[in-house]
Length: 111
Length: 117
Image 1 (spheres, chains in turn purple, blue):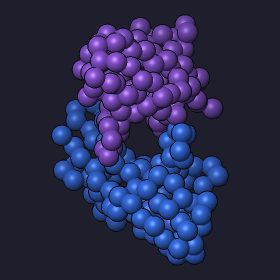
Image 2 (cartoon, rainbow over the protein chains, first blue to last red; image 1 turned 90 degrees about the vertical axis):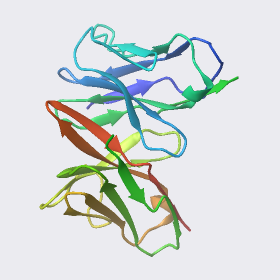
Image 3 (cartoon, rainbow over the protein chains, first blue to last red; image 1 turned 30 degrees about the vertical axis):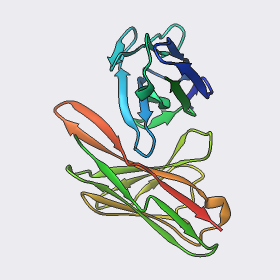
């Protein structure tokens, strides 16, 4: 079945540091890929998505590129802020239209 | 933007009692809602798909008699954990899709933390 493996945290960075959270997937067919973010006390929010190979999703300075050859969708940001502290989930939507999530990565950014 | 609410946000109950969790789409209608369960340091696991006007569809391994789902209206789905036991303690999250044009976006509730003593 479909599965998502993402880098386990927690990840702690200083403000303005470079962020990478790795995500790889296993799926049949051609899934859509997502990154969701969950801020403390709030529901998951869509951060960015990509629906086909080589697509790059981007939002709020975050980027992720759909790499079919490596089955990856790594999340990157060039300069993190304290306000980026949250839990980040990688997810895919497969041929059955259901979302499969990774375990989540807690990011803490210190001033 | 679209918002999904859950109530309660936190509940503590005694073993053997039943607990009802509500999921509401606040400014859009949802014929389908999804219920997830999340254990500490684990991913969200889809439990069931709630369908307005028809029976919910459950994922493999989820007991339909234990987790009762009722999609009462186009803006409300409820999950009732019947005869709760400590192993049912978890974080329950609902989501609802909103369609605008050709784009579908899943909106998630903030979750309900259930602790069964």
